[in-house]
Amino acid sequence: YKWDDKSTYIKKAPYFDNMKIEIEEPKDILNARVLVMLGDSITTDHISPAGSIHPKSPAGEYLISKGVEPKDFNSYGSRRGNHEVMVRGTFANVRLKNLLVNKEGWWTIYIPEKKEMTIYEASLKYKENNIPLIVLAGKEYGSGSSRDWAAKGPYLLGIKAVIAESFERIHRSNLVGMGILPLQFKEGENYKVLGLDGFENYNILGISEGLKPRKILKVQAIKEDGKIIEFEVICRLDNYVEIEYYKNGGILQYVLRKFLKDESV
Image (cartoon, rainbow, N blue to C red; front, side, top):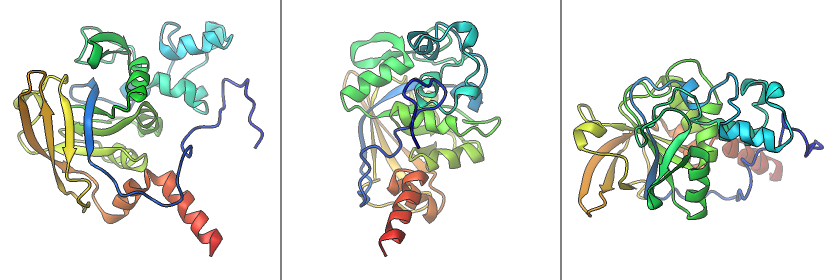
């Protein structure tokens, strides 16, 4: 397919960039930071809105920089073939309440510098510094209509795991399909009970020792004063097929590797 570099509707997505033919064994997630800390009943529309694009949002500013007038923005849904728009639209719902900041919308704190910036901008700075990202959430994370970009967007932001009290069934499956670990707090635990504020450094341990369905993993949350809060989570890879998807980095990579292997036989 001949891609049109000037198109603001469809672009070649980077899902297979730097993909190796052989899979690498999954490693523990170390020195991770929280990109967003969310409450209960976060919907797929909070995560990846489908409606109008705000001119002051990261996606709006991107389109303006490409010469698109706000009257011609159209919707996120219509631009779902352009990952540059959609990744900037991830967690950019005007009603999103990220508990790391005192306002609604597409904002967060870049923790190493204690600086407020857009979620997209912070994700780039974390990526530059090779810092993996996680999401902290409450009950029913990913509820509402099934939306593939609610998993694709976080993947492109650099999110490696979502730690929540519970997940909507299809969204949990979509996270696995994009190589993001859904981790569930144990019964009766959540970030409030454990005393987490989202500004900790996180280590997720037990992945590198091998995975099995619903394996218990250990999480260390290291406070700024050095105090360590340790707790266990249920790794919601619920069967061996999902473990294979995760090991491959997601279902797309799994399918491509399988195709390449079959071709070479």
